[in-house]
Length: 80
Image (cartoon, rainbow, N blue to C red; front, side, top):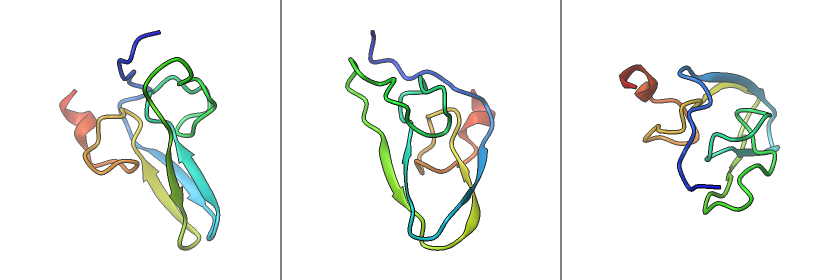
């Protein structure tokens, strides 16, 4: 397995997060449970990025894995 990031999708992934819950954003793009980690990074140098929700809200997680504001979308996908 290589250490190349895979683009999961070229758009943000909206998620209704729950206050106090910790989420683990997939940084490698291999997870089948996007935008969150399912362990598919095993064998690579990638590690999931933890995020703890401060309130109940809808957040837009990066699907292309190239955002400068990971784990959130910053519009970078529009340049790919």
